[in-house]
Amino acid sequence: MSARTLTCQVTAVEDLNPDVFGVTLKGRAESMQHAPGQYLELKLDDNTWVPFSIASAEQGDGVIELHIQHWPERDNSVRLRNLLQVANQLTLRLPGGECVVDAQSERPLLLIAAGTGFSQMKAIVEATLRDQPERPISLWWAAREHRDLYAESLATEWAQRYPNVTFKAVTEFPLTEPLASGERIHHHQGRVDLVLEKATLTFSDYDVYLSGSPGMVYACLDVLEAKGVVSERVFSDVFAYAPRG
Image (cartoon, rainbow, N blue to C red; front, side):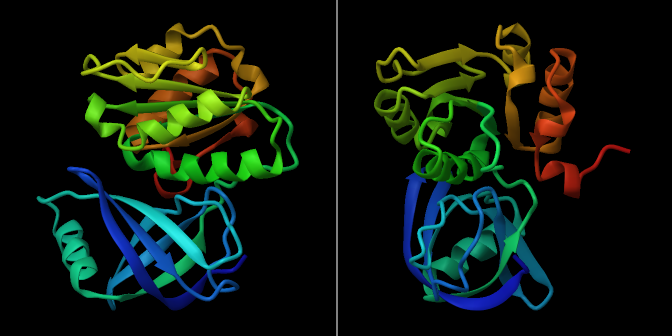
């Protein structure tokens, strides 16, 4: 799919937690098409486009969901939040990115996200549950503290409802309250790469998708490679915009 520039409607803006807000956009269905794992870019001005993972699988209805981290100390973040408060239309460019779920593969999925990197994984999970409902999915979501798991209820619902989905929450600080109950719902305390290092999964079996900062992605990649992951089956947008030297 080649990238397109278009104008769409802002149909909803809602706080998902004190630091993350969700945005729902609506445009012409054929113009809003994308693959699970891709991103779009929002136009702030003629020289500034900001990328965000698309947090919803393609439904054919022209609706796209975004999860946006608000950084009060960052100018572009403040400008975007202010723009969304007053604008009912936005200019965007999509789709972008090659970190797309391989629907031809039947290998189990290992999805590792930090913070709002969950949004990219959400689109992949939704598409996989719809198109490959038997494909095993192991979702690892890393955050600094419990409240940063802003869609915890959705992730736990997947694990409770679908026998092929496992959810592992990874927080650097202790949980403030227990996760929802379920045999496929687990919590680990620590940094996600160090937690992965202790895991007993056979990583060579998986297609791995990573979403987070370059530091987080490469730290996890080092652990995974040491544990036998097949490098050709590891995917991340970081490899394109922040390649290792």
